[in-house]
Image (cartoon, rainbow, N blue to C red; front, top):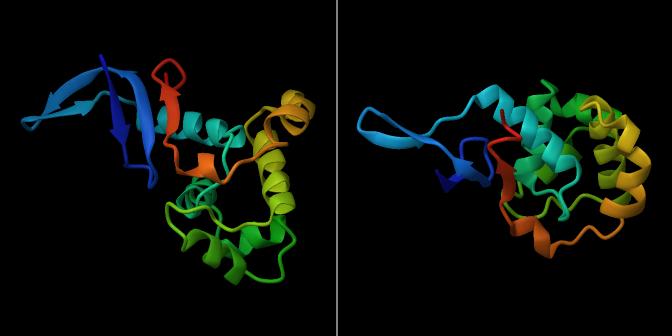
Length: 145
């Protein structure tokens, strides 16, 4: 078992204690992609750093939404704002702090974390740091199982 930087979700995810298998002569992590996507979505709710543009795109795609749909959820005038956020790639999205908190609360409700909303707001989302946005998301293989 080893730690592996996984980039297939569109942003860096550090898989902790990943079991490796050999596929066509290459060693790759043995992961269930759907479970990993679910774990990444839940982990992004409580990520200590600001969301990157790539993470915003992942969230939207994971929820099978168009940019217009996400803009409506966040009460934005049009989808071009969502496009601007996503275009920032691995850099912080540039989303307004309050909008990001609303997005994360909405995500928490969608991920079945509604019972933790108050804790998320009071503790985990109050000090979102731009510096932490560049750190890879850490997911243990237990979380992705």
